[in-house]
Image 1 (cartoon, helix red, strand yellow):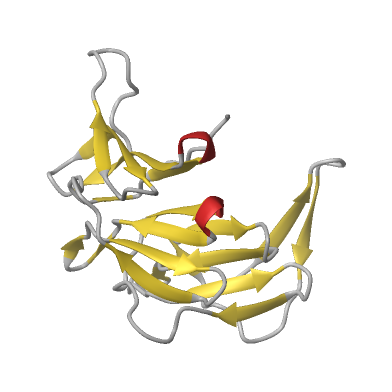
Image 2: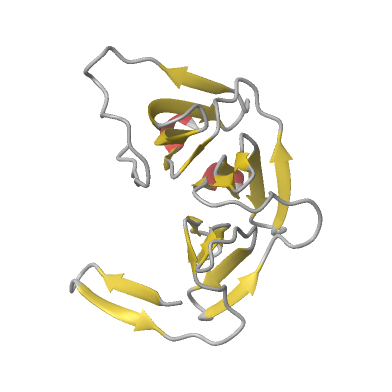
Length: 193
């Protein structure tokens, strides 16, 4: 259960030592950075034993301390491989889909940065659930972009979907054949405005 930091100026990695409490070792988490709160937030994932969790932890880089958040009230079901973005304009982390041993999820949730509480978002046009998705935040167009993943419809996906973060409406982008990467999962994306 390690935490590392890369100094981009020197190219040097350093391991961060922190105390307890802290999350258990996990794979397949959704992770974002809350710029205002100066903290990394991780949600969900799978344990080394293969179980799924719905834990949500925030690591504050200034205090070098982990805090469990989102524990009061409703919260997303345990899952791994969910898409997560930091919706900075609305001060929240948004997660979508993911999977567990009961199947794929299609729900969308937001963790409010001010209150550290979850709210399920009522979206429209929701695509089929996927796991191990590549998410990105498009601040210029106020939307979450998700691409690829393991599809609930069977096999790998190369579908591109957008969630408008104001209207909460999903749309699926259609591309001409040969103009989109081949289907894949367990991938990451970044957005270059």
